[in-house]
Image 1 (spheres, rainbow, N blue to C red):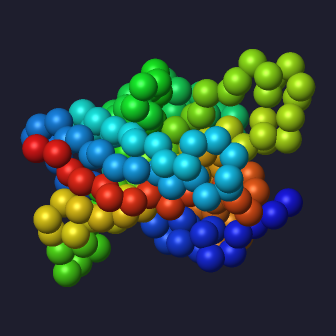
Image 2: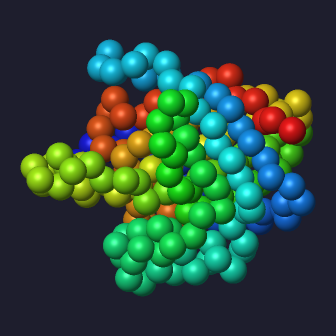
Image 3: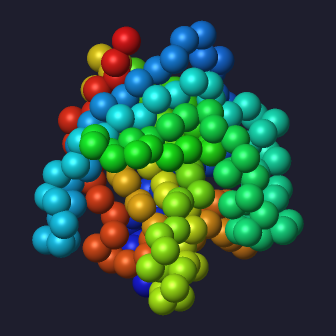
Length: 186
């Protein structure tokens, strides 16, 4: 299995289940995913709508589920909640089951999302290797003006490493897409 070391290290650090501020109003983020594989559309506009952030207790429960019962238990739990929603422009959206926000200092805010990704009928019929990567991971890094960039991993495998840190493995070397031109909307 291929692990993209820089991307995985970045995601492991970024997905730590640390404190999230309370959300008084709905937040919306718009941006562009840059598909650098040469297959499919090169740029895709997206919107993320956050109605609430995942609480510390809920994040701890998700971590414990993954650690104690495995990714299938986490997948079921994440499908059951919808603190945020992701939508590519012109397509149906889907639930983001984990939404966390962290002040990283110096005006930088990191927002992380994990979803149990929708599995296509062709993946199920063909029993493709992608079935082993049931999560989508999105990490946004915003400055004090609410603008920034990020990373989109459409097919990821989550596990807990020996050091009790969350590890993220992407489906392939070309399956981590940069996110550009993120803007928080009022």
